[in-house]
Structures are given as structure tokens and as C-alpha cells.
Length: 283
Image (cartoon, rainbow, N blue to C red; front, side, top):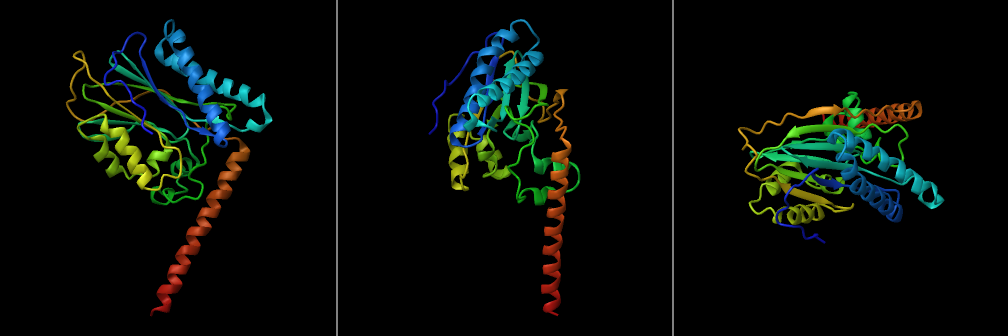
């Protein structure tokens, strides 16, 4: 069900936190992981931001959340391996500070153009980056839901942290992969551009359900206003990367990725051979 929100929220010091956490590790454990991380970030960020630069504070509380989810998991063997994504944005003055781990996403709609601010820390995305999988094949990849970074399961956490300047009228979408897996980009742009902001999250969730809805669906939408903000002159957004996200895979994961890449290659070769045989058979 849609959660009612305030029509407008005044941003006060040190800022306004918007965040999505998508738990993993089974229904019960995933819920524990996401709520544990969310509560810690919400509790600790204002304290740190009061005495540290926002980027440093945001990065620190993400690491604290990672440690806390691990600690809670160690207390109960049934929760072993639980984890959660986090995609957080903090409206701070004229800027949005972003921290990201996993495959939830942050989008920006500006001047009717949609920009994906975060990159999925996923196996399929890594294989695309390495040139071992095409973007087209990645959409149908068997292991598309395998993520390489998550709070609670990663010893060497490497979050993405960035910053960009907001413009009046910017619309932000923070969402779980249960939404983006089910909606094509063109449809996402159409729904994000609806005139009434209150209709957007409901329309997004409804479209994701209509598209299959096989996973948890979360959509958090905000529109930036205020007389102190400049209107956009174009759709361009310059994201300052404060800390780049790197997978830093262990040798076991690298070996596993190579095995999967080989399997994908063999599957594509088999499909090509089958197509060739069919074509020859029609001659």
C-alpha cells in the first residue's frame, strides 16, 4: 500500500534524509537487515552531520550500518548472510549528497530528461563493464539479481558517495530493483513526469505490479522547490564523485565471475549455432 507523506517539508539543518533500504536473506532476515540499517542511519546521521562535513558523515554512518547489520546477524545463526542495499540522498542547502550500496537506484528528472545517478553494484553490471556481457544480454542475464556489495555481508565495503547541485523543479526517485526490473525506461520517464507529484509513486508501483511485480516494490519520490534555488537551464547534471564504488572482488568471486562469463559465452554460442542450423535447414 502507498504510504501517505507530507505535501511539503521544510528542509532544516543539517538537512533532509531520503533513503531506500532493500533487504535480502529471506523475508524475515531481509526485513531485520533493512530496518536495522535504516534506524541506525536515521539516528546517527544528524549527530555526525552536526560536527562533520556531510559527505564524511554520510560515508561514516553507512559503514556503521554495515557493522551493525553484521553484529545483529551474528547474534542469531538463522540470520546468517542477511544484508540490505542502501540508496540515500541528503538535501543539504542547494546540494544533494548521495551514498549508495547495492542495486537500488537514484534517478533525477530534470527538464523532462531522466538521469540515473547511481550504478548497480551487481554481477551483471560488472560483466558489462568488463566487456564480457552486452547491455542487451544483461537485461536477460540469469544472475541479474546477484549483487556484489550490500550492508551486512561485505567486509571491505566500498560505497559510492557523490554530490550534485539541485535545481528548482528537480524530481528525485529512490527505488528498489523490484520497481526498475518491471518498468521500461520510457515508461519510467512518462510516469515521473506526471503533473501531480502525489500520483507518481502510486502510478510507479501500479506499473511495476502490472509488469510482473515478483519482488518488493519501493518508490520514494520528491520534488525540490524553494525560492533560493536556480531553475534549470538544461537537463545537464554534474555529479561530483567523492568516493567511487569499486567491487574489489576476492579471488573466489573473480573465479566465479569468470566461470559465469564462460557459461554465458557458451550459451550464446549454442544459441548462434542453433540459429545457424535452422537457417541451413531452410536452404
